[in-house]
Length: 125
Ligand SMILES: [Mg+2]
Image (cartoon, rainbow, N blue to C red; front, side):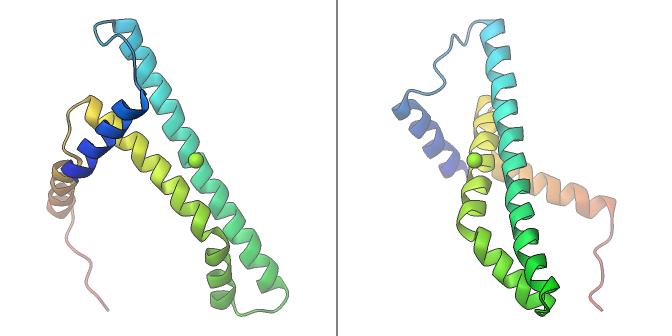
């Protein structure tokens, strides 16, 4: 994932994004608040895709279709757009991780360990 974070940073530089005075408290603050706003907007767009998925599924369930079959059709309807919205979310998370010099892969493994320590694994039944 470190490689992906570096590629994302290179893409940002190539596109001329994130040009702000890094020595300015106000410009750093504006940058972080702006990226947070964009991230939460993208999270809302994921919710919009779920809304479409459920509308498409429930329309068919109400017409008598099997629920699982209707869900699969709903998933197909949002397949392309949902992927784009998840990528948008990931891009802004990468941006924040790069800003704070986090290695997201390392952070994710630390989170796995923290969760395992906090609660035992559920047994398959
Ligand atoms: Mg989007």
